[in-house]
Amino acid sequence: MDGLAAPGAGDRAVPGRRTVPGALLEGLLENLTASAVVLDDDGLILAANDAAQSLLGRSAAKLVGQDSHDLLHRNKHGHSMPRSRCRMRKALLTGDTRHGSAEWFVRGDGRLVQLSWLITPCTTGPGVTGALVLLYEEDREHQGDAVHSAPLTELDRLTLLAETTTQLTSTLDVDEALHRLAALTVPRLADWAVFDLLTEHDEVRRVLVMEHKDGILVEREDLQGPMPPVPAESPMPLSRALRGASSSLAGPATYQGPPDSGIAVEQQRLFTTTGMHSAAIAPIRGLRDVLGALTLGRAQRHGAFTPADLPLLEDLTRRTGLALDNARLYQRQRKVAETMQRHLLPQLPSLPGLEMTARYLPAPDASAVGGDWYDAFALASHAHALAIGDVVGHDLDAAAGMAQVRNMLRAFAWSHPEAAPSDVVTRLDEAVMHIAEVPMATMILARLTLGEDALWRLCWTNAGHPPPLLVTHDGQARYLDEAHGILLGTGLTRPRPDADTVLPPRATILLYTDGLVESPRHSIDHGLDRLRRHAASLAHRPLDSFCDSLLDQVRPEDNDDDVALIALRTPVPAQE
Image (cartoon, rainbow, N blue to C red):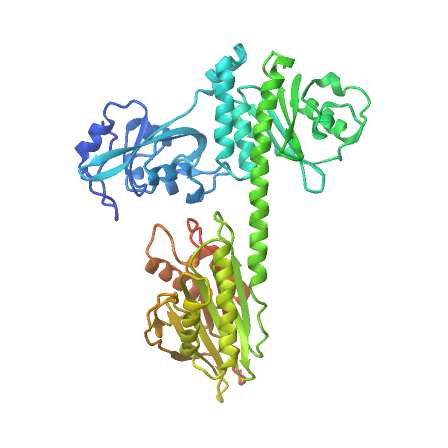
């Protein structure tokens, strides 16, 4: 195979790529006419056959050695997809055989293509494991002709329901669930799919309108948006569905007369704009309430919906209702957890002459609550404490443990305002072992004082936490690596060191948690170096902009951890 590339075949060396004999990969792909890509167990591309290179619009040299997820996988808007939401990557990591349909990939020319995939484990060499991925475009034109020419068989119906259950139960995102259902029903059952959902305030919103056009699904945002309220007595099909009545059929004639409500006006516009000649409308019911309605419409195909189609539609919306119930419950829990986390974090004190700010970002795809925290409080009229920490875990237990650690730290520090940070943390560690329900934790405690020379001094101790970062106004940045001791909760009794430094005027000191610098793909040193370089480049930014830019530029996209940070900036000297 001329286009097959593997290490040792003359291509350039790629750092971190496994060395696999080219003959083995050639043997793996030589009999495959389908588009095939071989990955190692980290997701790096080891080989791609001619068909895959053609489908993806990239030569072997542009594919081999690259991270397959970062290079190829996208969402529907063409943006990079978080690794934690990639089903193909999950299958790679778990060694499972999985299939996905209608997902977006980017070609070498920047064009998005919708492909289906099959991934299965394989051995790429002696003691070397990986996966074989087959990529293919579904024959939409042929599929559309088949759907137009013949009704669904009973087997087709059962298959559709099974696919719907699988697709909807594997996501807890409302928008994703609706897009998946649209892809399952259009063009298989209809040319249009319209979703109207009821909000928590009983308002109606047309959240998604999908059209099958030129062989692809197109989202019609011009037809989406807020809808008029549901009339209490209207006999019109959509109004009845939104009140929870049974499914029904509709057509342009249904809405030809004088409209009895604002919703009827919107339905007239929908039928006129889309050209639908037949529609089936069914309520989407949750366990307790009506959540909305699904309208499937036909415009290009000639056959109209009949009463025989309604039971299948109701089966689909019943599954949709359960999926939306679960997704909304999950989102409510996320909101409650995040609100609780934010309320556990303190208000920052006002320090004369100093700027101070803090940020907390919940994990994007985890439980949205965890053990990351920061604190700042007065010790006496001449001293303040700064703290940052991370309790092991990403759940409510971690958040509760975080609150315990923070409150005990405040009590110990306040009761001994002259004590060195190391002494306070030593007492805290003893309490964590005997009182708090905390497995382990890392933290930094710093004491901030103003000297007689009008310069601020920082004295700190570090219990297994990423080091503070000091950034001077002229763009020099260095980590305060001193005073590093063991984390809390180990049960070991070792002396904890202290360190101190004078903070230059207009300098920025940054305390942060590991979610800002850790990534599954890179070492912690890589993340620390990235943070240092970006922080140095932002030295002249106002403090709020400095922190926001760091979170935007430095936080790894594939990290599911929380991030907390606290930053302060020393004032301009009086003589200036």
